[in-house]
Image (cartoon, rainbow over all chains, first blue to last red):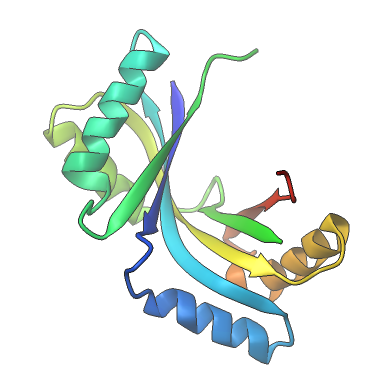
Length: 82
Length: 82
């Protein structure tokens, strides 16, 4: 089952990378605000059901993919649509 | 207008970070495959219409947010749904 995990810095957490991106975009003339930079992980999970895949992905996030002290994560499952 | 830009390594491009993540997940006992790591940028764009916002975001991607030689990008607009 194909999945995408989105990992973002939590609200109160400083995000220097986001600040740098925002500054650079403004210097290029773009009217932007509140830029935050996170990461994404695309992967294929071997699981019999979407519920099982989601449970595994949550466990992966808690154990490896996200630092839950300072980051939040979001799981998007591409279920077997044709 | 709130937007999220997803930036991913293109198909043929080596992704050492994705390989490392996949190896680590397997060592933890997860049955995963094809892991790829990219990044995401959340930001607020000042634009009068969604079409205008999308055009600006495409320009930002081409000029700063993505290296289009080796990365592809995807733009998600959160239009003003209530």
